[in-house]
Image (cartoon, rainbow, N blue to C red):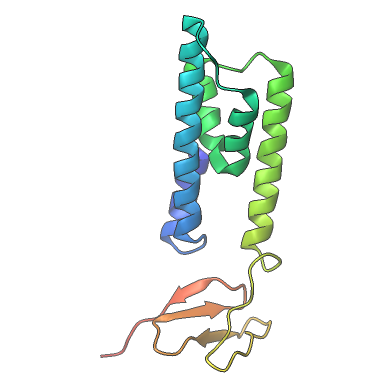
Length: 147
């Protein structure tokens, strides 16, 4: 829950793209539902959700919702092999997301001439006809328009 709140706050202040936060919320909601359905199916003796499916949603960013579901439904918390793979998916997801959101995974913004933003703390450049600029870390910055 705290992870999702921090992600939402980071998206609101522009540290993380809003699309990333939305993707994590959607994937987390789907994971929570899948874990709930699997727990209910286990209680009824019905067909279960395959563990590979649960892990796939965890890997794609649904792990915060899965963590909530595991505690809320007391589901998949005692199976050691499942927990080991769950934490592998968490580490891989966080590592890939961190890389993609860093300078290594996101292409440098370009100005109207196609020039890349040079590295350095003084780098701030604005796209033509836009109220958005980028800093040296390639994070968008909203600019105020003068009246």
